[in-house]
Image (cartoon, rainbow, N blue to C red; front, side, top):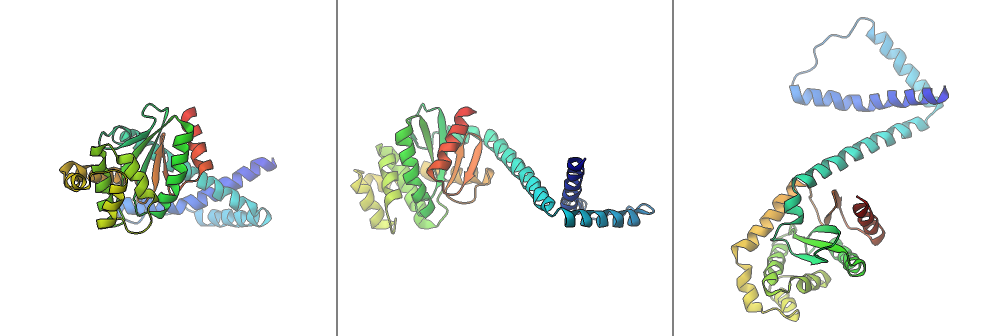
Length: 260
């Protein structure tokens, strides 16, 4: 009986928390206030309900936290489902776009997709973790999505990286850019390129190719479709994971992807 009463109180509190959102949605959709008159005697019943709810909360304050946790769980499940739907809808662009470089094991059983910017310090931190994971696991397929959102310097570095692919040196150049500190444009960018064995004159010419800019535009558009707004961001299985990631978290996500 006590458990039933507790569940009823949690349900009532959830209704109180959710009702304002429902009213707001009704207002925004219809653009008119509700005009249905209240039922006779409803005011007294409402007051009794509120009084009873207040009394119950005074006696059981932990119910508030329980109701809020249930609400958060519902919202999280809804967000995860929306992300999964977006990933399924754009799967070919995310996982199999020929304009996106691929590293790790091309035939791996788990694919990790990263949206990154070479000027993003959180991307640089995650890079070390991801490089170790790919080397140690041996069954990770890694897809690189150039996502230069931090200014012209980021765009220049992204264009150079994609142009390096034409010389078969995308991965070593990408690694060098991720490990580099300081400016990544102009002479400094090309000195890093030269240190990885790239033909700099050819790199400069290839950076102007139309398909380089097209690949970057496609990544920017895809990120918007997935509601990715910052770097780094990852797609693993059907999950979209925003923000820097540590080794325990990425290991768990890989296990979840493998288990289906």
